[in-house]
Image (cartoon, rainbow, N blue to C red):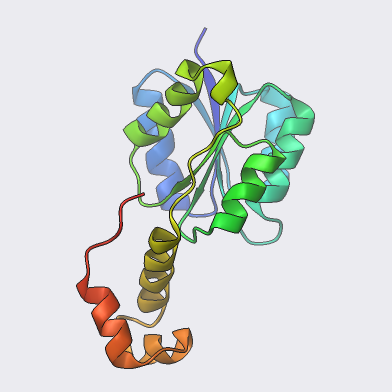
Length: 177
């Protein structure tokens, strides 16, 4: 029997590519674009795994994590986001998510996150890796810069820092997890 994975993301293009990639690897990939349709699909199909985007219109991915765990406490859930923060990572894991991963990432990284948890000893099950504060700051700056169309002066105003300070931060390599 093929393993069922529910993919929930409001970005139709990303969701479609991920579903195709999972299907090509032998998974029965189901897809939903919002929390309500994901809950209905999960009740009907009973997937063993779910990949959930954090930010969606309407209800958030965190709410979905709680609902999916209510439907099946054994479901393995990965939360994906382009807007990473330590607070939401902790909240996602507290609600029952297996791990919290920052976009962009590929199918192999997602599948290895599921496998990492299966290989982890029971004593380490509660220990989850969260991004460093420097990494979260770097990702936030990148998101704001993208929202500003690459305009450094505008991004600096949104961030509330001097333009030269932002340029120095941007000149550095992204910090490792």
